[in-house]
Image (cartoon, rainbow, N blue to C red; front, side):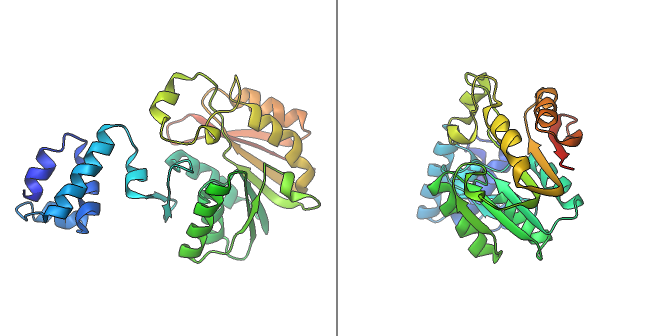
Length: 263
């Protein structure tokens, strides 16, 4: 079987097919495109067909490949962690606009946000908190591979932060409501990183109420949330005593991040 035949008969998205074939063969994507007549070794053909079967079953490409690009970083991922989304890059951009020397990422998952912040603020103290031990393994491996020094703490939200304060707290917590029909499309990803109560706001309620006690004077709390949740999140931030509460849209124009600061 040639590269051209493999791609033509794969019956998955053409771009994804090229990604999967490049991974199965060890060729670059450019080579896959440039040499369609090249014949595949039997082991590469078998590997590619396995990848295609998994993709047809709905498994995300990121899990099949074991990696995902986020804010210029290539991160290792597996089903223990949520796959980083492009819209979460807004949270990183907003955080980087703040002048901070210390930041904590609550619910860090694979470490995407914390590692991106450390990459672009190398002099800052960056702490990542994660309740899943399996996710922490993934995050620590990413930090080592990227050569970025982040402090990882095991625990839920602010629980491991006793006595500590930061100039910035960021979080992309679970915010999908129980029973949301979109969950069927996300069945390969960890439910604990997605679902947060009947209205999707349980985790945000916990963070909004507890995080301000760990903010230095003038410090900011920034939270990612879902479409249509920004008014409720703003109210939670106001109730927590935060000032200058605001919401920022992602590239699709969807209100995606809300935040406020302490006095």
